[in-house]
Length: 335
Image 1: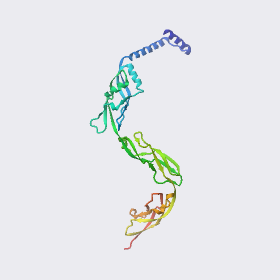
Image 2 (image 1 turned 180 degrees about the vertical axis):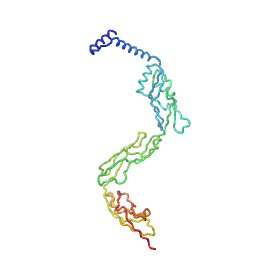
Image 3 (image 1 turned 30 degrees about the horizontal axis):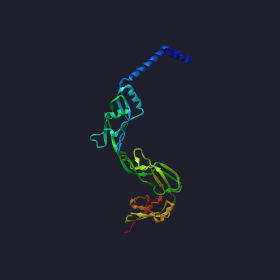
Image 4 (image 1 turned 135 degrees about the horizontal axis):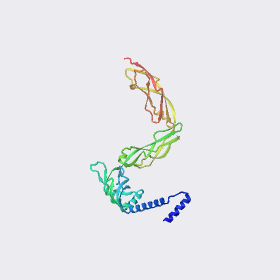
């Protein structure tokens, strides 16, 4: 050893040009060697140690789901040879212990109306020891009691809501409602989550420059907290060319008092609206009305009275009326 150390010191001096205290180096070497021998010897002795070991719970009962997660690590108090505990400490960074819920003796929390349960942690020692295969003993586990709750798995039908932004070309518009197939789907998951869900959206999509009817498949914006019967739906977006229609419509007076005659100026207004080219002729078949409801007007005021619409056809859009208000003149009826 002395001969090897002398050669090493000499070589280091030649390469680095450093002055080294030979006695200090030898002292450090033997100090380190002593520590290693002491540590190896201590591994043979029984020691007590505390370790947080990863665990994973499997085989949850059918039609049930954990409302709150069980702990992913348990604090184990161990007693045994140092080398065995060191082995567990190194293995705990990689492989969790698998705990089978179907074989665990869990109990209902007394007086609980919900599915609340608890596990006495000491009852897990046989499963833990069997999988750890260590020569040490598990003296106790912390926490000593594990509380958890189950939730029921239910099915629920919800409506599909379309989340699509459509930008048509000039003189083109979406005609009517977007058709969704299927328009409702079934979702399955924990009751506490599904109780708060009544609709499910499609993934957002923006369509530009549309000038014809589109049929497309689109994914649903589902959550990982529940399962869906359909991952996609089929959308049919009816798009058609529109034209502007301008017509003269007489104003109809409603709820006129019996004691007066009322004249309005003008007595006809100009109505403009957008109509799909295919529905253009229907304007004559289903004429809408412009009305003046005197029950909602202040006849003692000099302000003009706004007009409204009645019997609006479903195929028209962007209704505009000129003028939007009319003047009036009141005449008392002769007795």
